Length: 385
Ligand SMILES: O=C(O)CCC(=O)C(=O)O
Ligand SMILES: [Fe+2]
Image (tube, rainbow, N blue to C red; front, side, top):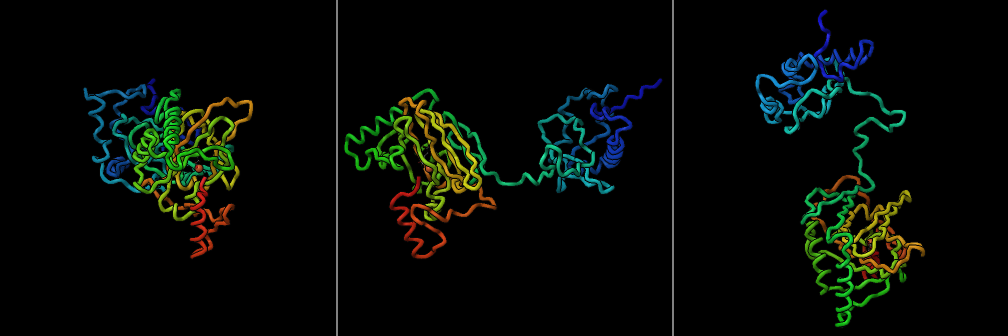
């Protein structure tokens, strides 16, 4: 008896005659074969009849006529295949939406006809038992935040968005190497001993932790700022900085928005907050103001952490306190740089600046003189963080 084996992809062989998919598949494959020339010129994923003939009766791909697989590829090169048609789906002769992939090819991928969806009508289901939506466009939305593990290189060099949180562990040093932490403390103590104006520790946030208002001259601090600024291609001379010292594990920082979230003057020169952590690991907590959702990012020694303009508006952030049983005397320094990252992509749907600052009755809706007076008061008393 003659073998009835088909020279088709293994996945196709799974469909029995009774399977309604088989009929649809057959119909669409016939269609694809018939119009294969047309598909070629459109640069579509290719169902090449000849390629199929080159398969053995076992359904596997075989090399043929002594050519290497690579030599068999030129037709998949995008530039060899004419202009692309718009859209992801081929609506087919019968008006059916057929799955065709994205219409592009990966020149480094050996082209094998192993996608069982190609040529099948695309699904029309809206929702599944356990699936919210099958509509691809339902995913074209901005997130509350996007977390990126950044490269440990000189420059970030990726498109950056206002929703982005960038984390780079061990950016400045190995996690277990605390030498930079102790150098920073010692360099600050030296400046203070020399009597540098405003270099002394002051109590911040109702005594929650310490800051120094003038750490200039600490070589470690200066080097850190330079490197961060370079990493995010920040505009020179537009930056604000903060030297926070959580002197031991009893220190913490309450939830707040950094001032560019509500201060229009600052918003012009600051669209990113970058923090570098040294010393004990502490959690940087984010509180989504509209939903109350909390997200915690443990900050490890040497880590770079940044968040964009809209994260600063939509979320408050702070450093979680530790319960007494976890107190161990270990401190943490965070060096914060606010500035203007110059390569940020602006997207639709950005939130407006916050209109109210409870502490100062600061309200952007006031406008004019009143508004500016409020902004100046806010700046004078450093209402940020
Ligand atoms: O210590 C940190 O990581 C947070 C610092 C902070 O939020 C600030 O200084 O505004
Ligand atoms: Fe902050």
